[in-house]
Image (cartoon, rainbow, N blue to C red; front, side, top):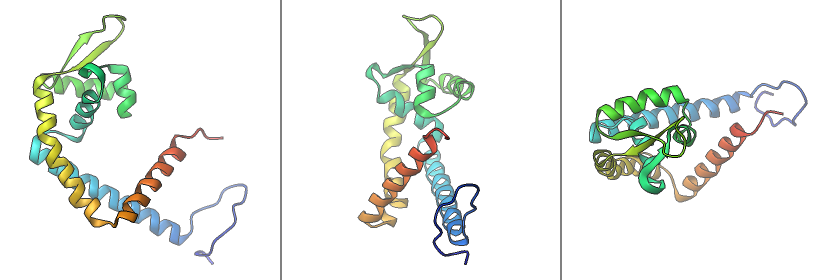
Length: 162
């Protein structure tokens, strides 16, 4: 039957109906959570999820500055996408770009005071939304399991294809 446990075989194997139901539930839940958390972040702080991601990375680094290439890697964006986004953030006074003192091929992204203020103002409402929409919906055991599942999925996705 389609829902029974199968032993792994070499070659192509498609998901079962139960596996597809789980996959769809996972996708729909993560999309709904992301949409609601993004909407609340924008409404409560005026920051987009991308703004928050950039500002978070900068606040977590020494001197609140980072090479743009390193920032792209840390947040998982293509350099061109990051460059366009940083331009919008720079126009709003959240960050500034400076020539890199040790290597003139790149720029350093520096957190501006207005960016730090916006980030810190967004943090409590953002974490409150995470608590309400994610943590409070699950038991402590489910929260731990969700973390384990997320880390396993990420490790699998990041592993080289053999």
